[in-house]
Image 1 (tube, rainbow, N blue to C red):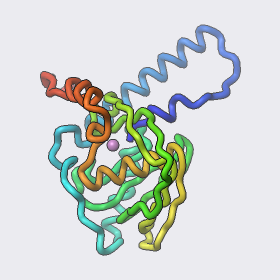
Image 2: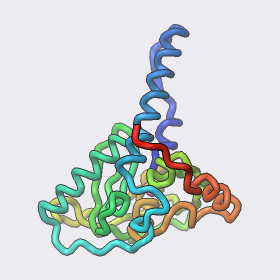
Image 3: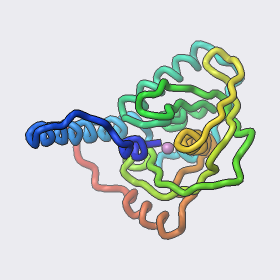
Length: 207
Ligand code: NI
């Protein structure tokens, strides 16, 4: 999942002069462009078929899986995402990484399942690193709270009680393991609009 929600958080910063503010905005814009370029380069983009296949269960949490988790965490950080599922890098195995906030540690859940879902649901805007590197966003309804179960990188059972953004990220990433994207979970009009933006664009040569 892309970081649309994280960036809207209120930040407390010392007073800046207009020049410093302009410089900060320039740096942020440059970083945004870099993260986006990174996502476009490192993360499979719609309509890549890997995004539409159900991933297979991991039978053995071995060094291969730990290496995969490390690679995914690295790609997620470099493209400034809050979540990344293995199929997004072309690996059709049931594992995702995520972080609940920009400064939170990265967590991995292997063979994740949602054990409990709240009846309450909430609609919020989501982006996905695989949809134009996070630039296509649509409103998606999710359960407000979930309890997720799976395995951690040592193969030990983990249980995560999540709400708000964390619950949303978990549901979004779990969808990826079943080949489901946010455009499948939004209204027909929003889906049409998103698909129009996702239509293949003329490809520029390497830069
Ligand atoms: Ni996504």
